[in-house]
Image 1: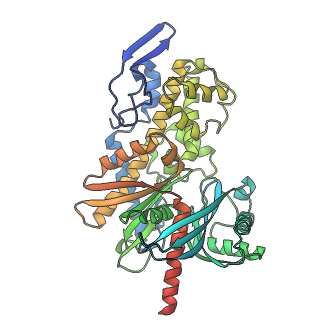
Image 2: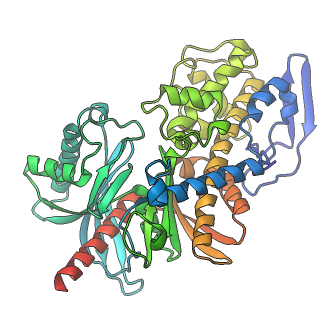
Image 3: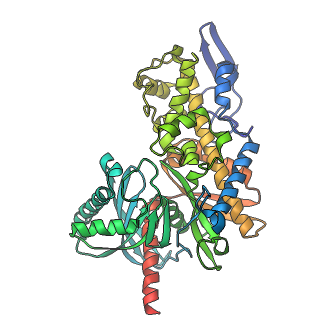
Length: 500
């Protein structure tokens, strides 16, 4: 089994599980992981029915290899002209080619739209003797009201322009016409660095009148409608690309960017000769895989469980982003809730009685998954979360809930790892290298905040990519900073073009 199920009980050498008939005790084994402490509550104490239900989430190495193979197959279909249309993994060219050199200087504005929050940043890129460049940022977060997310495109972009106006006022820079880089974390078909058509919304966005339109145009129009400031929009990039670029500044071998947060996606530097959608054979271009849609053509049916189907059917985009729905933070808590409800209905949890809150869609938040798995071993955190949901759990209930969280977040990490392994093997094959040394820049709340996600994820990626030496870099301020750095590069390129 690939999952050596590890646990968070750091302080126990003995584990006592209360049963109505008295108590059972057994000694723990020594810790198997550096950070995760003891192995799980021996699942044999939980009874075969609970084990049976949870075993569906446990993927063997062979199964993960199969996911990886299918991912690579779909990626190649997305890259090729004749199969691109029907491929689920769109492999969108980003027009980000050579990675930047640290010589862009000046002030840039960066916008970041991709989740429930929207950020505006002022980035000062300055020369620095030591490292040849320096990046400083000031930023402000604005939350996007529900009606802007699901109303019209005009409403959404007017709100964005309003936030920009507010930010420029606060920093007294409204009189300047700054170059702007826009991180836009949705599937876009680019025609150039500053021009791209929104293919479809994801992650709960639904604003009408945006799909099929040039996103930069929508932003420019909204800025014009306001008329109180000017901006020079020079680049639009996906958040995965911005993350990769941002990490590239710390580590020159960073050629993959990945996000595991509200959504899940990855990009990487592909050989131009294989990017058939763009003319040219020389060098490399960054490709936005949009791998969240992997499975939308049926490639994951044998891995999707009843809970995944319920989550999908209740979502704003049924049948779409099926791989993302197995992994990302937008759906993880709800998957846990559905499994808990199944256990209650089978009379295996909470004495067979669910509270009204537990029966409510969305009540088990994804952050609860992290908190449950971070429990120090006294079950206090687990107990508090469950009682906030109107439940009165026994110790055994707490342990079962922890197991459920662990199984679901582990499947997420392993599924995600299989996808990334597909990308890295693709890069090694295309480059015809015996060994590939590569750095992956990663961002996103699930990767950063879940206590064990990254360990479980790294382990699977490395298991599935022999002959690859992989470094993982956690991006700081990735999205905004990367967008600003790319606009700095774009400005330099534009200036260069003019002088030619």
